[in-house]
Length: 162
Picture 1 (spheres, rainbow, N blue to C red):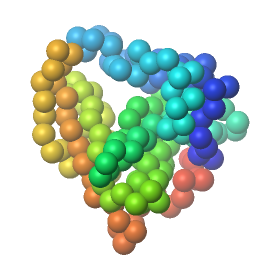
Picture 2 (picture 1 turned 135 degrees about the vertical axis):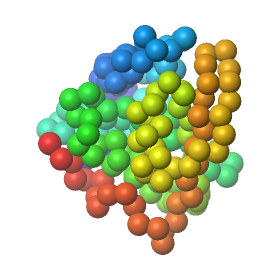
Picture 3 (picture 1 turned 120 degrees about the horizontal axis):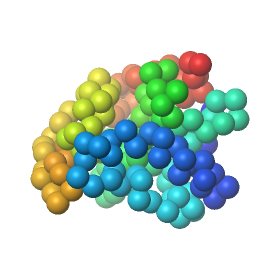
Picture 4 (picture 1 turned 90 degrees about the horizontal axis):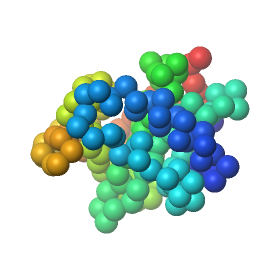
């Protein structure tokens, strides 16, 4: 089940981010942004959603409204649950949220060194729009047009393979 994160989820969110993003520490110049966040504040902002399996949080995603699109931020899945469709369900959820809020585009970015992320989003139909270098490395930017007429990537945000 996907639900809005609450302040009671802050520790679980931080642990999830640490487990999901720590594998990149040896390849990046600076830690991923997700490892530097105050997760109590993240939960309180009301933009982060979690997915639970057997009453345990195993994935999260943040979606933020901009003027003309929704940003998909900090999608993370616990390593033991990766490859089971949870990330795809969270991405589908953000796309459905964008549509329900009146937006037809989802955008995101990831670090160039996070090759598995680039592969994941490309498989979901996101197209690379550009790359940009910054102090903390190169970022890859994506966008996807979503429409009620375009089928989502998975059958249901309620289904999770375990």
